[in-house]
Length: 350
Image (cartoon, rainbow, N blue to C red; front, side, top):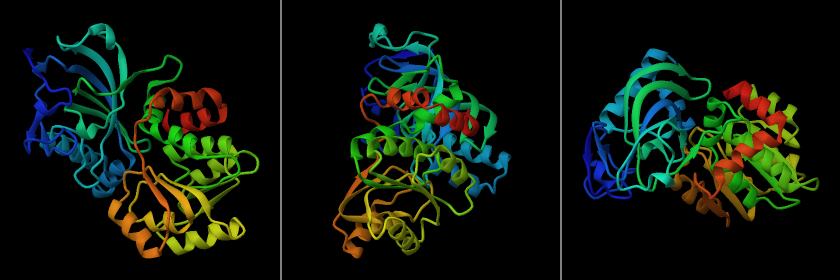
């Protein structure tokens, strides 16, 4: 392996095109793993957890065919040097073992060689090389691979916990920003509506919303009409009601939520869906001066901003930051606190 010096803390030395941008918006990264800069960490990758919006789009493009799914993923990584879906703009995260640490880094401040970690930065900015896709699991958005990846000096990661299986931890950490932000936003007595409540992020948000809103709060979950997860979510008892609605039908969502909430609208709407065109539903079911938290990567800023303007809604709209201080341990602790949530996650993603 060739050792390189003077790597940029934000990884711009790996940007191939266009020049002058950071790795996330870059069109292509250098994924030559025979070279290691002095501020990089080299990882042997075991599995990728592809962002739900991205994997959904890939599955549709491939018609659900596993061979075509593999081909699409390999093509993206070959062309871009990272798993950065050009349609959704999103990535995901990975787990793997540390195999080398750059000489400019204080080794005592980073994981030991051989440590298994989960990256907490998007695959859309992570140099990645896939040698082989070993298995595809379309039900939990994960693929097993042989390959290598690079973490930069400022990249976030978390050690894999000893008490939670790796696949389960990967699923939780992929959406770790959602529950901690929910905990910050929900107050006692609030009416909270979670669109996409049956999914990976939605379940954790429902848990936090129920805990924070308390007995006087109202938590409503929305899942798609054909989603079998609605019954599973109802069984958890985290929501006062679970509605099966097409979230792209804004007026139907407004009608059903308003009826269930006795004419009231939501103080907080949390959008976790992995499909497009749900911005207006989120906006219409939110009360004046309420908040909408867009966590899903399928969200269009343009549709949200202009949709709120067109509907004459004076609301605060928050972009779902995938990072919050302590978010990894916070999300994993939900599985330690709730046997029911852990059992459901194990069934779906373990």
